[in-house]
Image 1 (tube, rainbow, N blue to C red):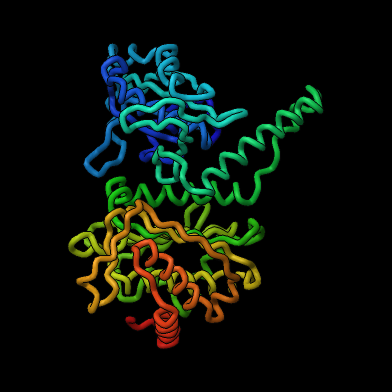
Image 2: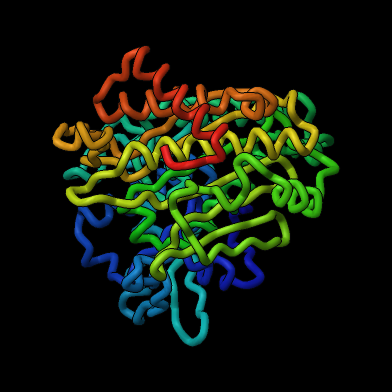
Length: 432
């Protein structure tokens, strides 16, 4: 999304229905009454947006019972007037070094006034927090905006690497402008890389999933995500090709996703303008969502069944890992991409204090995760996954997840699990 104050209609931002990496919503409030901590929270959001892709902080939209920002109250005259650009900028940039660039606009939509802070991506250097504030801000921290719409400190290596790469790119572009002069100013824009293309598709898919699940489930319940794509964006594959090959899948078949024992009945399978999409509900609650893009991206989000005492079952997680890998191996191979090296991202979200049950004999054992989210990345060719490596790769993912739950699997355990998964596929996806 191109960040600008030149919007033909602010409705696209205001009524998007969910927060994402570039949009954050706040309920109606008075800047003069939110106190030091409240203002520090605004500073955190602005620094995070500026350090990522830029974006919009919209004030005057509250959350409904499902946690979605759909209560369009607007601000009264006193609240709206309290958001003065110079006052907000002076306070926010007391914490940010260098100063965050933003504009403040007050559009009137359907007779209601909103305040929108238009935050621009950093130009040369990323913004570091240079002062602390009562748990909201830490000195010396780079804040980033995550795909699940959180503004938090960058602590993962890929997040810090991304900030550094953007800073280096900005510096190279500035140097190029100096060397080539005004004559070449219009040639600065370059074609987006395949990574950037996949990032845009992934954000679209996540937005759809989040809208389906709702903010409350998305932020609080155990949620499995998988992102799988080749090294390069594909060309020449159509939605018809995707649908035909998806319907032809055999072991596993599409109806086996996310696990054969789920017995999900109300599955919707259809084409959007960009992808082939499927999702289902169970007992009126969203169960899973997936999308295949012809450019070569697969994304899925699955709400894991939560057992008493904030627990999930290992068998369910194992089946999900295996079927996701085997299904994608067969699908990409059918598209003629069997030799393509696939990047495999598996995420397990909202895992803080979550317990992993490792079979009936270990239900009394406490295997607790002490981090908010689990992130694991691997690579494998589509042909390998189709040819039998799905079981071994699923075992590797599961082993790393167990490590995050502070339980170590032995080599013998892993061999036994991998053999069981192979049999699981060969016998027609019966229960493990």
